Length: 130
Picture 1 (spheres, rainbow, N blue to C red):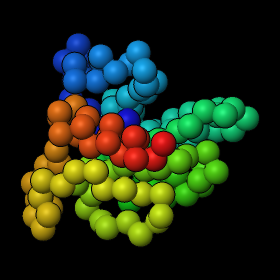
Picture 2 (picture 1 turned 180 degrees about the vertical axis):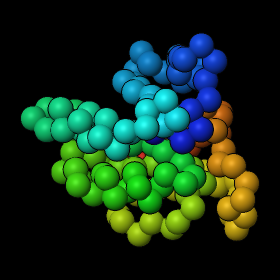
Picture 3 (picture 1 turned 30 degrees about the vertical axis):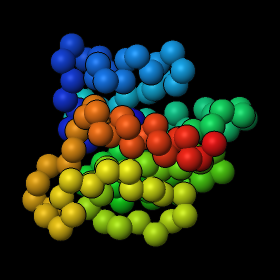
Picture 4 (picture 1 turned 120 degrees about the vertical axis):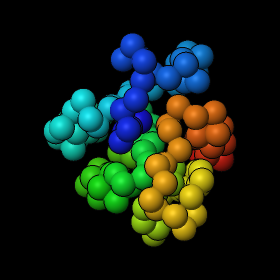
């Protein structure tokens, strides 16, 4: 999860995701707290180069294009990029838009990644990818 808003009480993953950590490995990166987030994501992805781990990346809004560009450098490692309210319409085959709340109005903040609709969208997308 690459969270452009970075809002979370007590620096934990949102409560909507906590119950799922038993079946999914969730890594949450709050961009406001990590100004070198691209380097951090690059490092995390590179660490999985020799593993058989299936990686899916979730992000939203203004970071969508940057996240897709970064994943393009690791497309052999990442199965999908799941986006919420992207400010661009990506055309890469591994990208799915899982939630849209502001189809044409990019002045509105994207739906938070901890929102129940986002959780449901991610789970549906992951199920479809299996």
